[in-house]
Length: 414
Ligand code: HEM
Image 1: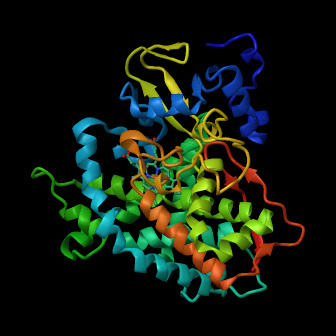
Image 2 (image 1 turned 90 degrees about the vertical axis):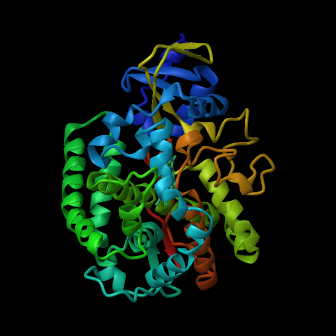
């Protein structure tokens, strides 16, 4: 419902909101918590309780992804519900939980070391250069973006040497996902990326059928639930989603965390000296600066929420970045404080978490525990190797982005 005050709110897709989304979300929470936006042609949901309600209520379906995801991922599990969703998620869940996940710990450790040592032979020049104390590097582009791509490609049994291509494909996919104004050029670039990626992957899947291994693609080929196996298109869709979902997100989380720690050096020193604070620092970063800031949904029936009536078929945007800073849920929400008593860090990586960085409800992030392992290991190794790390002289971190948001680079002297 657009109230008189709310009419003064800027458009969701305006330059003003892009410049400072948190200020806009603060106003939404205070003035119009379920707010119609003309530019988006849907409602913006900004309060913690309402976002949680919508994530967990099947009336808020993921049918929105038919337009904003399917053209680049294929029909992925994010779009499914009910038994179909459970079956398709169950095929990959064993690789991302418990013993299945533990198996990948050495893979993550090896990749952290590999990237820092820059010892891999690769066409790209920066990958060959070593990281040494005193060097100045961009922790986002030179480390954060590499790590999750290297880890997931190892899991899938794909070569690191194609990093530049994976990076290009997923960057175009991420732009497609964040294209809230549906700019046709961005959409087209995303669709072309999928075509190229699938042309690359199809022969790999074909070959893997006769050379099965321990990797995740082999796992998808052989997985069977209720006598059902995945066809080629479903395998390509799964692989596309796995390559994408954890890449930009994990890299951005790492960079934002080090930005918060290095801005106030005593925080960096505290975490460096007491490693029990690494996970709380990751968890607080994901609260105050979730890499993925919002998820869309579409109502399947009429539903009333916070005084607003949403007819069936209405688009809504669940603003987790706003919910995570809701002053009715978190004390002093704009302050980065990994000792805050109102955030249970042990729950952050489960569907019972206090924040929505990984979503909530049935589509809760499949890779949350993998992301935790990557971030924790990477942070510990960086703190061990570069105890004197600091922001490069004259560099001030700047957060950018609307759908996806983090520091746009993090120039540090190691
Ligand atoms: C810090 C890192 C990450 C963040 C912030 C993140 C965030 C999210 C969010 C918000 C969702 C829910 C989307 C929705 O409900 O519409 C989600 C779902 C998902 N994520 Fe992640 N993610 C991360 C890492 C990963 C990793 C490493 C993987 C796997 C390699 C992964 C795979 C998935 C998948 C497959 C889904 C869909 C689950 C379903 O539909 O049931 N994510 N993620």
